[in-house]
Amino acid sequence: MRASEYLIATVKETPTDAEIPSHQLMLRAGLIRKLASGLYTWLPLGLRVLHKVSQIVREEMDRAGAMEVSMPVVQHAELWEESGRWQNMGPELLRFKDRHDREFCLGPTHEEVITDLIRNEYSSYKQLPANFYQIQTKFRDERRPRFGVMRAREFIMKDAYSFHVDEASLEATYQVMHQTYCNIFDRLGLNFRPVIADSGNIGGSTSHEFHALADSGEDEIVFSSTGDYAANIELAVGQPIKAAAVIADAPQQTVDTGSAHSIEEVANLLDAKPTSILKTILVHAADADGQRSDELIALVLRGDQTLNETKAQKLPEVASPIEFAENDAIEAALDCPPGSLGPVSLPIKVIADLSVANLKNFICGANKKGQHIINANWNDICKYDRVEDIRKVQEGDISPDGQGTLAIKRGIEVGHIFQLGKKYSEALKATVLNKDGKAVTMLMGCYGIGVTRVVAACIEQNHDEHGIIWPENIAPYQLIIIQIDAHKSEQVVDFSESLYLKTQALGIEVLLDDRDKKTSPGVRFADSELIGIPHRIVVSPRTLADGAVEYKKRAATEKQLLDKDAVIDFLIQNTISAKG
Ligand code: ATP
Ligand code: MG
Image (tube, protein in one colour):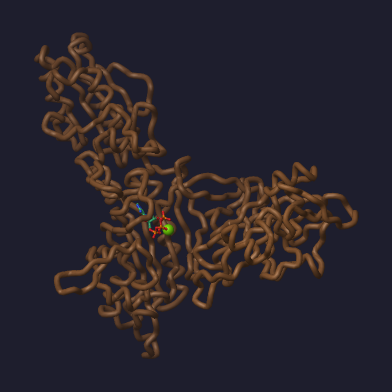
């Protein structure tokens, strides 16, 4: 491609509304442009990358025996009513009406549509297992679209759905998909980790997320320093270091703590460690439908620990999403301000975290304004109803399998695989006849990859202060040829044109920077670094006079001079062969 006939939409300044490197660089390198919040146009250069990512995903899904389909973006409400999600999904689901006043939504995911298809197409266990995928536009009216295509409202997902007659078959396909995802992310050159993931409100099912490691990641992932354990922090478990007693075997005592409210203030005042103080957090209980009720529940953790909201809201008695009690509600219910709360004679349900269940001689709020109890112990008055794991694991905790300690890193969720079981097939009555001629509900798995998000994640992991450094497999072009002073030198034009045509004929994807003299050499160099094309040849009158051209690899700092007659062989070695 000739740059003179192409949209090179590079921008020098960093856009002020872009917070993370990938968002800044995608705008600056001219890969995307914003239309409106969470809506982006992919420009020619960006689209080439997106197509390459899609193609790698497609090849690996095909290799795994999945069948490609394409389902509508617009879906009718009746199907969603069958699954119950028309009622259950919040404002993320964008709903609208057609000219006949019928209700529709923009598909945020396609479980309903595929299950509807399969219940009509398949009738016998002999046709299973079957796995279908598509690479297609999704719409989710995200509460907070941000970071460009990383969390957009309209984005491209590869979603796949598998159908099975029994658990063993579902498990087998799930393992194949797990391996397929590893192959895909390896080919994309990502530094990634598969981690055990929260299976949401479905419960009990197996689920893994694939995270690209990056400081800008929205998720925290936890993994063992030496063992295999790896999990999303939402459900990670660990063993905290044991806490020491405040003062061993001293009598219990109520003390004035005045305006000391936070764990830190109480610890300072009483010269104690946060590990020996109870933290009491009040949340709203769930009503019969799991919705928020006015009733309150106390959650008790060790002072140095933090509540894991995902774990807490999974408890049947806690409202989901979790809702913390307002100060007024606490005072009204318990006649005590939040800073002096403790599980002492509390008239509400108390759930204790594992970190406090075995604590002895601890400090806790006395449930009286400005007072705490020291050397408290669990007894008939100071008590809990049940013990649960509701804490967020911390760096340095012992891994649940005892293998090493836990480290926490940030990750970008680029993929998610899930054993759905019968959640959708049961609701939509998707059955096949089994060996005995009896109708059985199919089991399902689903497998997503954020294709557009992957592009951003790759940039997060591959950039420097000058711009993007594309991995060979997904670079928009492999080679850029830059002309210097072509308006003054016929030799430069002749040589670069011939190199362009020859490399193109060899199948090398090449961009020729043949923009006119208004584009200075400095801008050409800066653009080539910003756009991040892996290999660069500079053709200038100065080096050509010595029979040479300059070569630089984007990822390297040093340049080298190549004999102009040896350039083609060099490029074959370093682009075609290197790409493999
Ligand atoms: P997240 O937790 O990031 O909101 P999710 O768990 O809701 O994602 P899934 O339903 O598992 O997402 O969707 C499959 C994949 O689609 C995700 O792993 C992610 O890579 C991608 N994805 C989800 N939401 C978005 C979005 N708003 N913008 C871009 N990609 C997304
Ligand atoms: Mg997910």
